[in-house]
Each structure stands twice: as structure tokens, then as C-alpha cells.
Length: 389
Image (tube, rainbow, N blue to C red; front, side, top):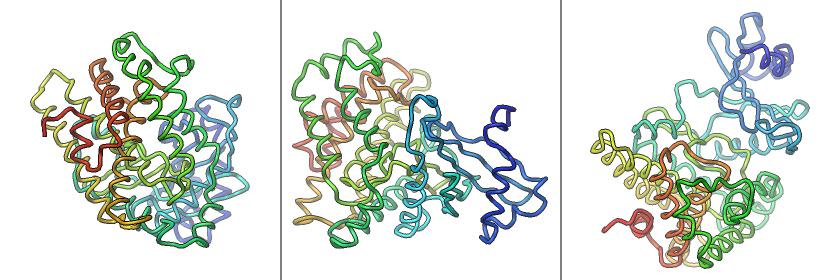
């Protein structure tokens, strides 16, 4: 650790915190020979401080939430209770779909700090995709995990009373407002100062900003995001919020969890596979290999939806009509995610060239324009990727 991070993440404070919870089997190993404990900052830490606590035989993760957005500083306040939201979501996800998230150990309200399992053998899924590595088994497990959570927390499954309790536990927080602003509002306002309307995509911008139908469709998706309360969501399910180890996958960073439309989680995830598709298609070196991997991303989209729908069998109305509408909403949410990552404030490393960004922007506008006619993942990929079949 640097001297600065050592000062921010006071060693004594964290050791005292572990001593406070020494009754837990996962923690008691850290309360002896504390002089051997090592602390290290891990992750990119945009919102929170994430610390690995390690001794000779064990390690855990401590995640603490300052009262502001960490990467922006104290002038950007943010409710520090987001850590409790994440802890409660981890507990429920772990209960409904065992193994789909790191195991949560405790949440300390006083210090706004959570302790959870350290995924020492896992790596960032987005980084793997950029490197051209993807286990379809991990893709399937991810889809089945979120499908189980959506199904088992769905209004049609749990009933009004339990659903009302879930809504109280997971209300619309500041992070839900941030999502609304940075996925559905700011990217579709050409004058917004947070957008990145670079010269290399300028020729593609009229299809977004000069087409009222695209802007109207984005507004429809925003309304669904804010008003359709059907099940517990991850709330930020991009490939950077997934860790993988061979054929295993686990979702992380659940502080955005809220009660909403199930299609949002899957739409965002599909968009991220589409980013990887266009990223690899636009690499000229060793192009055959990259094109082959891009085709694997089409498989990932199809496997995601088929695996998800095997688990997500709850519905409002008839199952077929519900699933048809679910696919339509997935397409709309994927469109919004594709667009916001190109023109908005949070780019993704998958889109490394002007060509890939232009292609992703085109895919996003096509999905928004075509969403009402999309009731299958095959049609979704055909429209997004302009495939012949």
C-alpha cells in the first residue's frame, strides 16, 4: 500500500473492526498474530474503498462507503448507507441462488463497512473478454443465477406482503437516480456537458440526436426503469460487475440493487456482449481469430437469454406474452446501454476504436427503434449486429 492509502485506510481501524466480529468463523483467523496481517487496496474503487485483508492462510474483503463518490471527491456527496444495500442484496442473492455472489460475512453500521468473501482465484470478466477469453459455462451460470434471483423475488412468486417488504428494504436510492440520469437522460441530451461527443463519432450522431423516434423510445425505457416494480435487480449488471474463474461466475458490486423490471439486468448484460463483439470485429491484426471470438459473443447472447428464461418462469399474465414483452424490453434497455457507453460519461474499454464506437452506437439506435418488434434473442442479435440470419 502507498503511504496515502495506508493513511486513508487506517490499519488499526480495520483490525479493530475484525476483532469486533471475531465470533464469526470466517473472521476469527484474523484476531491472532495481528502483526502479520497485510492490507492492500484492490479494484478501481470508483465509489468505495475496497481493501483485501490477508494473513498467512486466509483473506477477506472489506468494502467501506465514504459519504461521497470516491473518484470525484467530497464535493460529490453520496449516501454512505449504500453499503448496507449491497450487503442485504448479497444476502438475498446468496440465499436465492447459492454461489452466484461472494459470501457476505457482516456489515458494520457504525463504520459503514462490509466484509465478504475474497474471490482470490477470480478475474474481471470484462478484461477476459477483451483478451478474447470466454467460458460459455460461466455465461450460462451467470444467466441462471440472475434468473433464479429474479424468479424467486418476483411479485407473482412471493405475493403482495413479501413483495412490499422487499420494496421497503430496497427503495429507489441515490444510485437509482444516478442510473436514470447517466443511462436514460444525459446521453440523449446533446447539450449535456458530461457527454463525450468526440470528433471520431460525429458523423454517426445525427442518427441519435436528429431522430425523435429514438429519443422517444429512450424516454419510454426510462419510464419502465423507474415505474415497473417486479423483482429484485442487480441494477448494474455489466461485465465489469462479474468475476469469473474458468466455468464459474459471480456477480459483484450490488450497491445499485433495487426493485425494478427484470429486463433491465439482462438488457445491460446483452449490450456488454455486443460491445465485445464490435470490439473484436474491429481489430485488424489476426482478424480471423478476433472474428471467431466475436461469433462467440453472439452465442453468449443467445445462451444468456435461453438460460435465463429456463429459470425466470414467473410472469404477470400468460407466460408467453410476458416473455415476448420481456425480450422487447431487453432490446430497449440494451439499446440505451449501448448508446450511453459511446456518448455518455462512462466509456468501456471494449470499444477501443472509432469504428467499434460507431458500430455500437448504430446497434443501440436500431434496438431502440426496433424494440417493439423484437420478441426473440435471434431477432435482437440480427437487428443489433445487422446479421443476415
